[in-house]
Image (tube, rainbow, N blue to C red; front, side):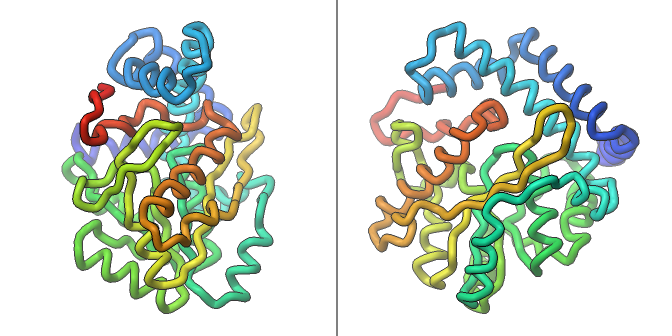
Length: 292
């Protein structure tokens, strides 16, 4: 699809209210599950290895629920990108852990926000961008013509988008050293040269070392955050939590293991809202059998 068509489609979807956007998204997710395509296969494989205690019926139920929630997320994104910022923020009904932000202010250190593929990460980004001058890692989209559009909507509150290259990484260190705020998706699969194998749901998994290095070299405070979707289109709850204390360890293996555990504990709150169709284990640990 061309960039112009996608932008038009997003504008049309943004004419829906939250209830209808989520309902349509869940319908499409349910249809995707019945079609039994690649996303369904990946979801099943991820759930089987991460929750070995579940029987096949339970895997099917959680997988179907998860893909419906992913559909809701997909249809919410046009709303987050096309609606006024104030209208988006009005969807936030509760903030859990706001006192941790007060501790950050008092410390005058940098703040590293770790936002996994859980709930509505676009709304979580908007929330923090409305409070702080922040920066976030940015990878250009695969679709031609979309880069300018995405950069415009994600930076409309003054957020700085930092490229995932050497120059961009240096910029992240500089921002944190100056007491600034940056956001990272901690559960992305890193390149081998910038990753370390650590357990994720007990599975040796290639895990990013960037977050650990940023903390070690700048003294930044790591917090884990996500926007949880509330039932019956009631809105969202912003959840903010301290990362596992092991993230501050100078032992990189201990630090990245703590990063994965921090993400796991958030997923445990609402596993259906995690993006299980993402191939988190696509870079197998040395000697391990590839999952996909």
